[in-house]
Amino acid sequence: MRDILWLIRHTFKVTFSNKKTVMFYLITPLVGIFIAFLAYGNSGQNVVRIAVVNQDDQAITTDTIHFLSNLKSVKVTPIESTEVDDALTDNKQDVVVKFEAGFAQSVQEGSPSHIEVTSIQGAQITTFVKNDLYRYIDTITAMSKAAGGDAAKFKTMYENYHQANFKLTSSTLEDTSRGKQMTYGAVGYLLMILLMSAGSLTEILLKEKEGRTYYRLLSTPITARSYVIANVMVNLCVLIVQLTFTLLMMKFVFNIDFGIPFGAMMFVLVLYALVAIGFSFITVAFAKTSASSSSMQTLLFVPTSMLAGCFWPAEFMPKVLQQIGDFMPQRWVLDTITQLQKGVSLSSLSMNILIICTFAVAFFLVSIYKFGRNNSTNNYV
Image 1: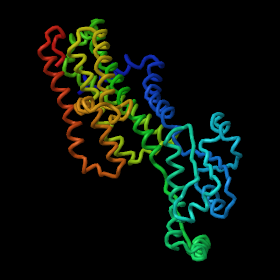
Image 2: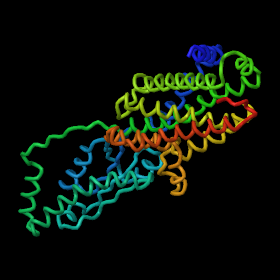
Image 3: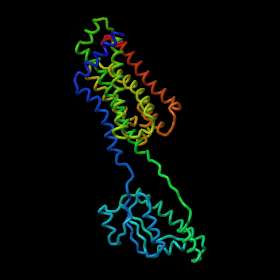
Image 4: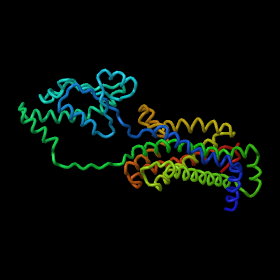
């Protein structure tokens, strides 16, 4: 145990003797947060600008325009028909709703017409406006049909509808989707950065072999097994510090709502840290030099992170790539966090946790076997 503690201090001293290295390990994980902000930071609710052209000076038309004005996240501006083209092409308005002469009469007759909704921003904007607008018009049309063509009866029903004495109470629910999206984006990049950090720390094994430091250490009572165990412990400590620092920055500095308890998030990511260490040990086990190990890490860490959906939701990829991504540990970490955000308890995700742990155990077993068979590395373990 004394040898392991000495090796831990030795590894920390070698790795973090330069203050720039300390800053690198702390600042690099924040890159994912900035990328998530760029991707999702402006995804909040925007105001839809609606320009209204009223060519039908009737009470029903006026009330319909008033209904549009009372919608949330909508700004209604009256314009003339000659201003329509400029309002859209100059991006002054998002949608133009034109009420032509005869609109009120058509609604009263039970066959709404003489209305036109125009936008150059696509169906997403027009659908948003049409859903609420047409629902209101359908309500008025239903009254007309119920009146059976009796103008006086329709007028009474219409006035009663607008003068209803019932009270409607509304409650605003907090939209947590933005925080969840930002958490997914930031954690996705963090998973790859943890792989890179673990790989960099594990490469110390090869670098010290190349510098003959490893062999000098083994000439003392220190064993190869103690040397590797110390590296694993240093690796885990550094990754836990990275995780803690990054999550605290996300929560208290960037005010990102994880949608799950801090402890649950930390637990899942610490398990992944073990996976990252095991994965990085495989690259060292199969590489003969630190340069080849770095190349192998680049070829393995980045593509697996992409296939797992760390950079974008896995649903955006073809079905074949999604199926391949199911064999990546990163996918199961992201899926676990997503399920937790949906309200699933951690105990109900025991299969996900077991799969993540299995990846870690498998990676360590493969690297141990390779170390044992690789005589050129002088048997690390």
